[in-house]
Image 1 (cartoon, helix red, strand yellow):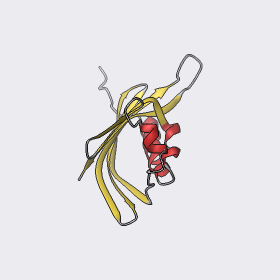
Image 2 (image 1 turned 90 degrees about the vertical axis):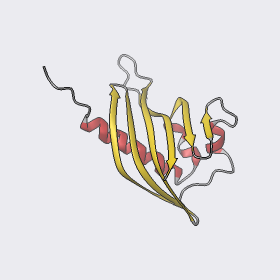
Image 3 (image 1 turned 180 degrees about the horizontal axis):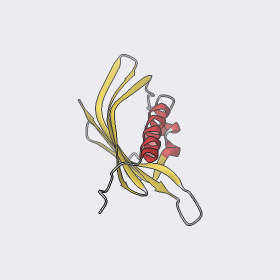
Image 4 (image 1 turned 30 degrees about the horizontal axis):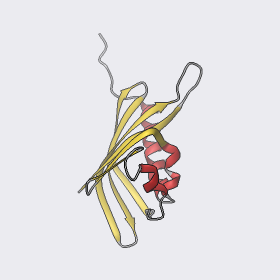
Length: 135
Protein backbone atom coordinates (compact mmCIF):
# COMPACT_ATOMS: atom_id res chain seq x y z
CA UNK A 1 0.00 0.00 0.00
CA UNK A 2 1.25 3.46 -0.91
CA UNK A 3 1.47 6.15 1.74
CA UNK A 4 -0.91 8.97 0.84
CA UNK A 5 0.68 12.34 0.22
CA UNK A 6 -0.85 15.64 1.28
CA UNK A 7 1.15 17.69 -1.18
CA UNK A 8 0.90 18.37 -4.87
CA UNK A 9 3.68 20.75 -5.94
CA UNK A 10 1.81 22.35 -8.84
CA UNK A 11 -1.38 22.88 -6.83
CA UNK A 12 0.61 24.18 -3.86
CA UNK A 13 2.37 26.70 -6.10
CA UNK A 14 -0.96 27.75 -7.66
CA UNK A 15 -2.62 28.33 -4.26
CA UNK A 16 0.41 30.30 -2.98
CA UNK A 17 0.31 32.40 -6.14
CA UNK A 18 -3.43 33.05 -5.73
CA UNK A 19 -2.99 34.16 -2.13
CA UNK A 20 -0.27 36.61 -3.20
CA UNK A 21 -2.56 37.80 -5.98
CA UNK A 22 -5.30 38.43 -3.39
CA UNK A 23 -3.00 40.52 -1.18
CA UNK A 24 -1.63 42.39 -4.19
CA UNK A 25 -5.22 43.20 -5.16
CA UNK A 26 -5.83 44.59 -1.67
CA UNK A 27 -2.86 46.90 -2.17
CA UNK A 28 -4.71 48.38 -5.14
CA UNK A 29 -8.39 48.36 -4.14
CA UNK A 30 -10.94 46.09 -2.54
CA UNK A 31 -12.73 45.84 -5.87
CA UNK A 32 -9.63 44.12 -7.31
CA UNK A 33 -10.23 41.19 -4.93
CA UNK A 34 -13.85 40.59 -5.98
CA UNK A 35 -13.05 38.50 -9.11
CA UNK A 36 -11.00 36.13 -6.94
CA UNK A 37 -13.89 35.42 -4.54
CA UNK A 38 -16.19 32.42 -4.67
CA UNK A 39 -19.90 32.83 -5.24
CA UNK A 40 -20.52 32.68 -1.48
CA UNK A 41 -17.40 33.87 0.36
CA UNK A 42 -17.00 34.02 4.14
CA UNK A 43 -14.44 36.43 5.60
CA UNK A 44 -13.70 36.62 9.32
CA UNK A 45 -11.70 39.57 10.61
CA UNK A 46 -10.46 40.74 14.01
CA UNK A 47 -12.86 42.87 16.06
CA UNK A 48 -15.86 40.58 15.61
CA UNK A 49 -16.38 41.17 11.88
CA UNK A 50 -17.91 38.37 9.79
CA UNK A 51 -18.68 39.18 6.16
CA UNK A 52 -20.56 37.02 3.67
CA UNK A 53 -22.55 37.55 0.49
CA UNK A 54 -25.69 38.02 2.62
CA UNK A 55 -24.32 39.79 5.72
CA UNK A 56 -25.04 43.45 6.36
CA UNK A 57 -22.84 44.91 5.00
CA UNK A 58 -21.88 42.22 2.50
CA UNK A 59 -18.28 41.33 1.77
CA UNK A 60 -18.74 42.96 -1.65
CA UNK A 61 -20.09 46.17 -0.08
CA UNK A 62 -17.07 46.42 2.23
CA UNK A 63 -14.53 45.72 -0.50
CA UNK A 64 -16.07 48.16 -2.98
CA UNK A 65 -17.14 50.84 -0.50
CA UNK A 66 -15.61 54.29 -0.15
CA UNK A 67 -14.32 53.37 3.34
CA UNK A 68 -12.01 50.65 2.01
CA UNK A 69 -8.36 51.54 2.59
CA UNK A 70 -5.84 49.67 0.43
CA UNK A 71 -2.68 48.28 1.99
CA UNK A 72 0.58 49.90 0.97
CA UNK A 73 2.63 46.71 1.21
CA UNK A 74 2.48 43.15 2.53
CA UNK A 75 4.80 40.25 3.26
CA UNK A 76 3.69 36.65 3.70
CA UNK A 77 5.85 34.16 5.58
CA UNK A 78 5.66 30.61 6.84
CA UNK A 79 3.04 29.76 4.22
CA UNK A 80 1.85 26.17 4.03
CA UNK A 81 -0.76 24.60 1.78
CA UNK A 82 -2.92 21.63 2.74
CA UNK A 83 -4.68 19.90 -0.14
CA UNK A 84 -8.24 19.12 0.99
CA UNK A 85 -9.32 17.33 -2.17
CA UNK A 86 -9.01 17.58 -5.95
CA UNK A 87 -11.06 20.78 -5.91
CA UNK A 88 -10.11 22.47 -2.62
CA UNK A 89 -7.08 23.56 -0.64
CA UNK A 90 -6.25 25.52 2.50
CA UNK A 91 -3.35 27.92 2.89
CA UNK A 92 -2.17 29.31 6.20
CA UNK A 93 0.60 31.81 6.89
CA UNK A 94 1.75 34.90 8.76
CA UNK A 95 1.31 38.33 7.21
CA UNK A 96 2.74 41.74 7.94
CA UNK A 97 0.99 44.52 6.04
CA UNK A 98 1.29 48.29 6.23
CA UNK A 99 -0.77 51.31 5.31
CA UNK A 100 -0.10 54.87 6.41
CA UNK A 101 1.50 54.51 9.86
CA UNK A 102 -0.32 51.23 10.64
CA UNK A 103 1.46 47.88 10.77
CA UNK A 104 -0.82 44.85 10.75
CA UNK A 105 0.46 41.45 11.89
CA UNK A 106 -1.74 38.36 11.76
CA UNK A 107 -1.93 34.64 11.25
CA UNK A 108 -4.26 34.02 8.30
CA UNK A 109 -5.87 31.15 6.50
CA UNK A 110 -7.78 30.97 3.25
CA UNK A 111 -9.74 28.15 1.67
CA UNK A 112 -9.68 27.99 -2.13
CA UNK A 113 -12.17 25.98 -4.16
CA UNK A 114 -12.44 25.10 -7.80
CA UNK A 115 -15.65 26.66 -9.10
CA UNK A 116 -17.33 26.17 -12.44
CA UNK A 117 -15.67 22.84 -13.08
CA UNK A 118 -17.70 20.48 -15.20
CA UNK A 119 -16.93 17.93 -17.86
CA UNK A 120 -14.64 19.56 -20.39
CA UNK A 121 -14.37 22.83 -18.46
CA UNK A 122 -11.37 23.59 -16.26
CA UNK A 123 -13.02 26.05 -13.88
CA UNK A 124 -11.31 28.70 -11.77
CA UNK A 125 -9.87 28.70 -8.28
CA UNK A 126 -11.79 31.06 -6.00
CA UNK A 127 -11.36 32.14 -2.39
CA UNK A 128 -14.25 30.68 -0.39
CA UNK A 129 -13.03 31.61 3.08
CA UNK A 130 -10.49 33.94 4.66
CA UNK A 131 -9.76 34.40 8.36
CA UNK A 132 -7.33 36.63 10.26
CA UNK A 133 -6.09 36.37 13.86
CA UNK A 134 -4.05 39.27 15.19
CA UNK A 135 -0.61 38.54 16.65
